Image: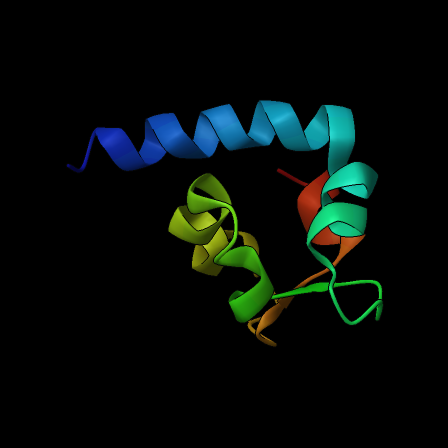
Length: 69
């Protein structure tokens, strides 16, 4: 399991670099420009690494947090 998490994170990081704005547009149901943990639950890969990506620990993923992956 410990090996699986970095693999998922790496996979998601690659996707995020290509389409972070598309991901926000797809998952940001309340249109506030960020993804909450509840919204992230719609994407299993994202939900699995949410806490690692949420660098400021505010409970949301911003475009800049997705960009830094």
